[in-house]
Image (cartoon, rainbow, N blue to C red; front, side, top):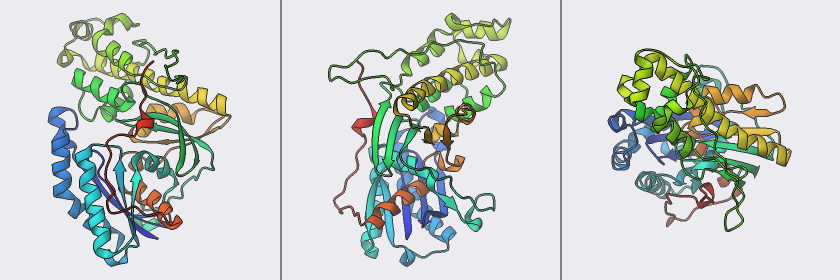
Length: 372
């Protein structure tokens, strides 16, 4: 079934065509240069750029797939969660496209789409590197590790649309923490990719940052055994750096850290901060994940979201002998239209349809908890 997928939940304007789980095209127009001066996504700019770009992005996706609009058999689009203004641009475009051609329309959950990304493959002619890519399709049930700038969650997936959230963040998401640390120290934008690159040549033992303790039970009986917290780590890295220093450096680097002047930090100091922060951020994720593995007995883990491209997270999980860990290709970790088209195809084949009065929602309640 040839399905057009549209993704505009944040700052990536993306469209793709999927047919039978095979990616025929996958176009992502990045807005990074427009948000870089502010070291973060500006919602008004994001929605404006989506409005300007979406027609051309969809047209390119169809051309890359060698298709005309009349060849499509369905349209899928992200409806939640995300930036409301950005979501509405993609949602209304998808509705109009489907209505004008009298083809089925389905609105999907952005986070479920991330978990579905690893099930997609490429035909040889559409593969980014010119060779066919067959996905390592996981059997259900599996544990999902959703990690991005807006969400951090551990889920149990019993089917593509039957997902139970076991644990999530009580404050910052892991990708958000990467961005905020990078912004404070002036490392660059986007923070996740910059810190990952810096950390490769840094000493992850230079600082020993604290791990959060989430032991309290909420008033509603909520257990925080699998939950994450990144506000404490962010505070330690930004405001209390010297308290957690293990290995001293002389000269400019040490002086810069003590003065908390991001621009003054030396290259070696910056690499050590990045490596130590990244190591702790990943350990926080893995602590909750390994608890879920022990408690559920499920040993297959599927990762999704932009932080799933992080090299430290990938290497730590790839080295775990008792787990089968599946990562999407790097180009399917970030926001993309292929994952939307892929899960949309499953819904449409089952006969599901969304009404034309479907609207967008900025949040999904299950993916954020209060503490305690």
